Amino acid sequence: MLGEVLRKPDKGKSSGVLFGDHERYVDWDGRSEDPQGSPGGALRRELEAGHSSPITEYTITQTAMKELLLGIFENPVIVYTLLALVPLIFVIPFALFAVWWERKISAHMQDRLGPMRTGGWHGWAQTIADILKLIQKEDIIPSAADRRLFKLAPYIVFAGSYAAYAAIPFSAAYIGSEINIGLFYVIAISSIVVVGLLMAGWASNNKWSLFGAMRSAAQIVSYEIPIALGLLAVVMVAGTFDLQEINRMQSGWFWNWFMFQKFPFLFLAMIVYFVASLAEVNRTPFDIPEAESELVGGYHTEYGGMRFALLFLSEYANMFAVSAVASTVFLGGWNSPFGSFLSGPVLGFFWFLAKGMAFIFVQMWLRWTLPRLRVDQLMYVGWKVLIPFGFVIVFGVGIWTLAVR
Amino acid sequence: MLTEFGRVLIFLIVGALFVAVGLITAWLLRPNRPYPSKLATYECGETPFGDTHIRFNIRFYVVALIFLIFDVEVVFLFPWATVYKGLGWPAFIEMAVFLVILLVGYAYVWRKGDLDWDKPAPSIPRYAAGTGVHEEAHQDGIEA
Image (cartoon, rainbow over all chains, first blue to last red; front, side):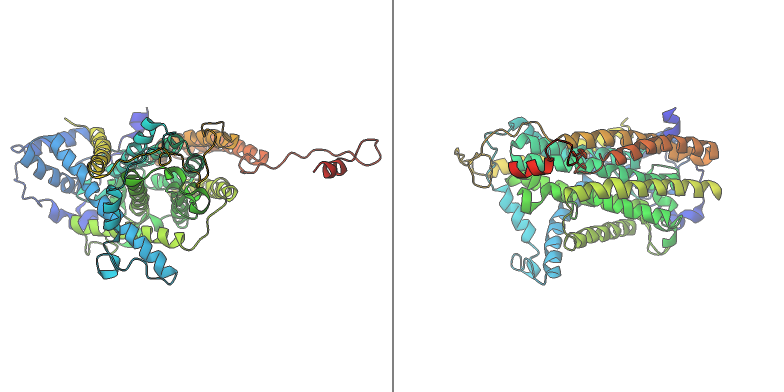
């Protein structure tokens, strides 16, 4: 029953008009006319058999990269491992850049200059110097801590936030895993981080850590429901969980983006999602789990050196993951805002990053603008404002869709 | 052949391996000179006292319970959202009935004050003056 429901609906959309420019990337890797001969051809046939929907131009763009790699390595595990490393070589420079960027933004908002010396031009090497320092720091595990859980926590936090990247389409040519329940999977896997945070706080055996972890858990589970309701409205419009397919539906000019569909319901859904995602990644104004001025450092009070760096890295990875989901489902992801102008797999990557970075900038901007909420205000916003709004959006979208059917 | 969820597993393994590689690199480079006061629990410089693994505020438990109900309901809504366009109004009305039942519970929880972090204090009836009982407010004032 559930399997039937979850299966990708057969849209039968394969008109060349809709995908416009993507057609010229079909023969991107110079694939021969007869795909039977190459190992990649076998992969394609398998994909065709596995998916109920017909192979479309974009799927071919996506498989082109895999075919190319399969031709070289002839072992799917190696190929998929290489493909799984792609987000990692994006995430690490991104985190290094974002930490520096955040310091510069905060400085300029407060009429300061921020880091200026390290590396020369506007202190660009500041975070690299920081990470080199953190690598050399002594690893301190408090004698009162639960050593095993203390060591395990960074693994769970980072693996959980990194696994969310598996279903995020970076461009028409790259997605980590073509699971047909992508959006649902992202919501589910990103809550694994909570387990890691609770584990870190509990294992530290420190009062600050425990307070931070408990607050963090309560906050993340409270705001998971507005997130799910906001994304549910998108699923109701799109009729699929597949993020690549959701992206394809928004192709064309920017008014095709889901943000402007069923106005104002999906626009409100975006706001609900964005506010709740701030709480999900513990950003100000929802940063009571690691409120520096009252809880020292929250769940990572006892972490130092490389373990702290990894927890920090996964925080930034999470920030980009929620921004990426927002840009994918509401802002058209890798679609160019100007129809087929400046679109294509490589430029799609650029558009996707630009939209994600815009969300990151708003997150930073809010951090240096708004004060921190109190814990009771936090509960109020989550349970009494965002959730009723979420239900109104779901009902509104449902009635609208069925009424104009 | 690897399924698509196998690729998800590869992502999880790559994430964990990255952490391991980072920690091993740090382990090769860093010094290790522990002594008791360095390994003490951080409590702002005070001598730490007591254990942290104690019973915690019941509020967190209530939040978890309410979350569980809503989350299960959202999980039911997601498959419905992909197919309701084809099923039309009957499916919508069925889901609306399901949601309204949930919303009744939501209204109950709201009215009970379980959605507030500081639950409103129960109103304790006070004895009126002249009934032969001490005035509570007066007594409180003395004791405080």
